[in-house]
Amino acid sequence: MYAIVNIAGQQFRIEKGKKVFVHRLSGNVGDELSLGNVMLISDQDKVSIGEPYLSEALVLAKINAQVRGDKVQVFKKKRRKGYQKLNGHRQYFTELLIEDIAGDGKVTRPSEQPEKKAKKEPADPAVEGEAKKEGAAKPASAKKAPKATAAKAADKGKEAEGSKPAAKKASSKKDTEK
Image (cartoon, rainbow, N blue to C red; front, side):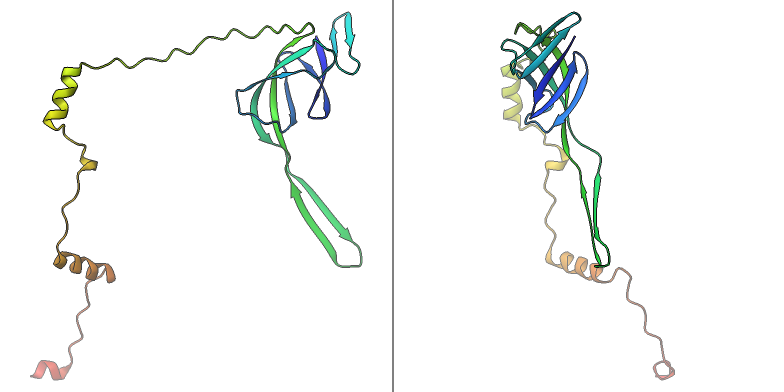
């Protein structure tokens, strides 16, 4: 079974379970789309053609990814004029996964199982109250470091200026004689 569908001004031949790259559609990855612009449905020996669209036909698709196409380079040149221009372009595409095609408007959705989220068990209120009263220990990263004194800060500043200790002055003969 296949169908011809008009998506974003272009016609695509689609089949159930196949992936199709179409021009960028709004939506997030995982969103479901129902496409109503079905122009033709062929089910082996039965063909239904719309004028221009089939009224009750429906296609269910899911957005797999929002991607960009290969880079196309556009090079312009005018000979003997010294004019050259190089541009690049990458087109945005949406990858659709076709989940179902229905000629009568009744779409059978894939079995949807609700996600089971583990609920957090409420803790015993008596235990929580005791922890708050006792002033539970804070993690080490939350504790503040003691403030440095002015003298230590000045020493740190000197160390930061020159990472190496000051070199000793070369002694001259006059300094050694005295």
